Amino acid sequence: MEYLEYLITFVLAFIIAFSSTPIARKLAFRLGAVDVPVDDRRMHKKPIALMGGAAIIVGFLVSVLFSTILPAKMFTPNLDLIGILAGIAVISLMGVLDDLKRLRAWIKLAFQLAAAFAVVFISDTRIMGITNPFVASNYTVFSPFISYTLTILWIVGITNAINLIDGLDGLAAGVASICSLSLFFVSLLRQDLDFGTKIYTLVLTAALAGSTLGFLPYNFNPAKIFMGETGSAFLGFTLGVITIQGGLKTYAAISIAIPLLVLGLPLFDTIFAILRRVANGKSFMKADRGHLHHRLIDMGLSHRQTVVVMYTASAALGLCAIVLADRGAISAIILLLAVAVFVIGGAKYMNEMGRSFEDEKDDSDEEEAEKKDDDKDPPSADPAVILENTTKGTVK
Image (tube, rainbow, N blue to C red):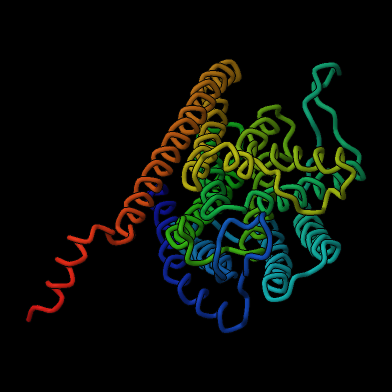
């Protein structure tokens, strides 16, 4: 019965988000929340509506709140839920304001910190310690200062990590969906979580995956609407909080490794972006065109091929997290190495296919151009031909 409730949570979130997205699109155009391509970082060529994230948020909230009134009463509101909802309210306000009128980086950071503080102090959500084999107790408890600092840094970091990969149609929505589903199955398999935490995490991840997948059909290339800051900030913030509330606050080593694997792709892209910008003498908050998806595009992959490669990489990391939770570290490492070989090889093959396609297209364009030139050849200068054409033109 409980699995049916998770399915209901997922499907309800999907339906609400799918049905709400056209409304969000119409509202975005009416309010002027439109992304106009003005630089080479943007991959689209025409204005696209923003604020698609509003549909994701509505789908998530309706589904989660509905799950609290299901007959089985498996999920009841608690401080964790109140805290995350308070943070979502703050981060959603920031997203809407940024989509309507671009906010400065420091203002967005202030909103992100406020949202993180809200969930931390309302629900006492925090990373409390870490496994430490070098001490007698096998774990180290963090001081309150370190605990709260790490928690806030994690939430703000994941919030920005999802935002940074939101550069191609369907990329952030797809990756966030994969991360949510990975966390769902990990929570389903873990035996070290207490019953309440397990149910809470399963409900939230099911709702998050359903609402994001409900939005994806409108956002996949060619996109009809973007999630905007409203969506990317919400997804990043919610994933960051769920990973803590759903196990990262415990001491087990697996609790630390799992979110690092599940969120490995956006985390790697974010860390690499910060290091790249600092090395180039730029502010780490200044946008550039050096993210993973940009590099794959520059390698010769098409828009859709790039998205598929990054979906595959994210799914592989999520699968490794699931194997880690079910079979242990050795099996997860072996799987990770095996998948890495295939992902790299597949990306190289897709790159060669892309170049071959471009070469064929160039040859086809040249042949078409030559054909047009032949059709435009000047009339023959042969007097007999001229006389024949003139005669044909006078006969009625």
